[in-house]
Image 1 (cartoon, rainbow, N blue to C red):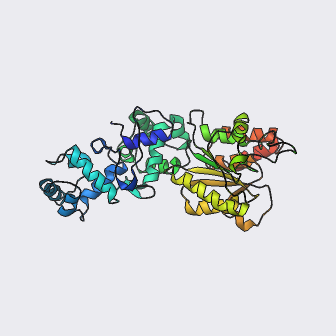
Image 2: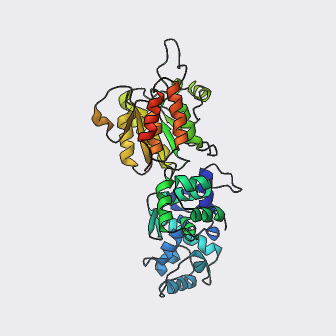
Image 3: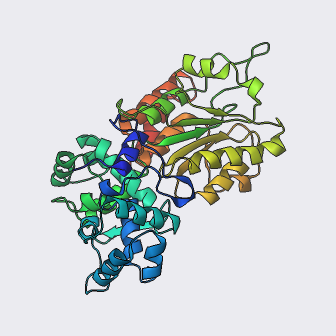
Length: 403
């Protein structure tokens, strides 16, 4: 199977090296960098191309606008208007007069006219299971990167499905996945549900009162982060140890001059590295808009990535995070709020409030985002920090067993 551009994008997002340079889909809808002669069936460009040529509004005039010759345009319409429309790109390519140049013109025009789905647009329905582009991209990443154990335990797939998936890698699309032996409706439903909470989940976190406690008098930064937060963030970043780095983002109301020492402090205490989006004003009331802007930019810049968010109750995080949840309900798996100050409970609706990070680990375990062993490792750090006892650890594990 040919590894094409969409698969390369999915693999690159997981940090998996490829032999080709991958460009993003160009601005303005043009398929910059997308080679129409190398499309993988079932990917957004291939689906969009077929939607364009099969659409009843694609007339001779429209095909001529796309740069197709009159003779070839007539053949395309005659084939489309026959009993069966174009089912795949090879069928389209087989039409006399259609070659790499014409395919590229059709694809560029399909992008420009909005036929190529993206984001939350429906990509297709396979074995009765409908996928958006984001969902399909997440599933493709999972089936190409998850271990057999993760597919078996975390995604709850049966043995034959796991074997079929692992043997077929690389899998270029959900369409290709759906054609595998032992992969049917139930498997696709499980993968769709699992994909947005798989190992390579992203993290967006505040700094002060979330990771960084108040510093002692005379110190710029404290001696250590809150108990368990570094361990939890390492698990979210690296999963079982094979996960790729690069899924962390920090958003703070601190001004740029206030974060100069923060990256080294985070590294010293084992908190994964990531870009820090800083505030400008330093004023809490203005900081909300700044945080919403910065978080929105992160999420929109990483299509298909699901996120866990960490904040605290000290200033504007509850309001900013609720705004993000309302804007991206399918992209934020959960938003934790570290309870460091009592506030109006209506500001916390939809957020998961925790007194310590053992509680965060327990909830992520319940949701199958992390394993029991991983949750225990976080909780042990919180026990060591004196915030919970060993019996409380066991009670958290018992109360949060996944369904």
